[in-house]
Image (cartoon, rainbow, N blue to C red; front, top):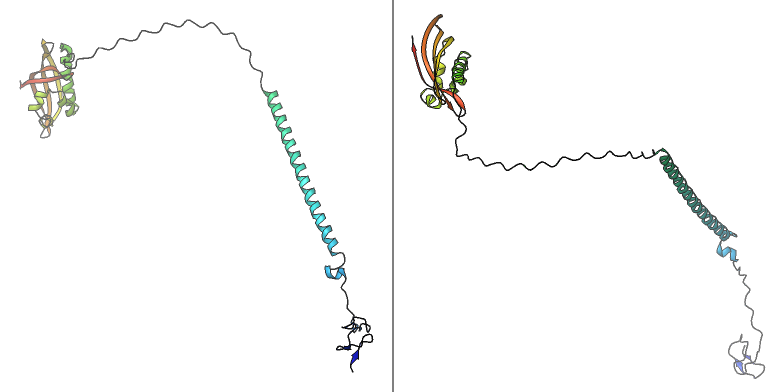
Length: 249
């Protein structure tokens, strides 16, 4: 059924219209919509259980307070430790100071003895002319005779190398070491008797001698008697024997 505005008679296209679209007057009370119970959530339901935020805040406050107290305690303990170390160092230094012996009194020094004047520098050593021959060894009656004795003593001791080295270089060039060692191979002993020493100069002397030799040949002792002489001369800083003559008597 069509509905019209009771003020201006305008037909209403919407039966539920509240205002006339022509005159604009209110023609009916606003239709009430079906009532639907809507539960508005409480703020505590939206934000959580009652008192949850307060507990979080209290917990944070407690944690922060604990951190502050812990840091303060650490600082106090650190300062106390430093003071204790400083006190120990002071006590140690005081102890060392007490134990340190008093410095000895300076003793009066005796007057220094006058120093001897410095020795004059030694004069420069004169350069030796190596082109000149060294000081010559003088041959005497006694050292010539002793040289011959030393030679025959080395032979009796079977020290043929020592005996060979007591010969002059000229004689060793004609008489080998093998000749000397083989010539005395059967000798048991020798008795040397120096009869005389003739000194020709300070560079030569002739030693005359008799020699009684004992050899072992074919299992029996053989006795031989010799006479002869050796010349004694200086060579290379020592006395040597040269130019022998020995014959059987």
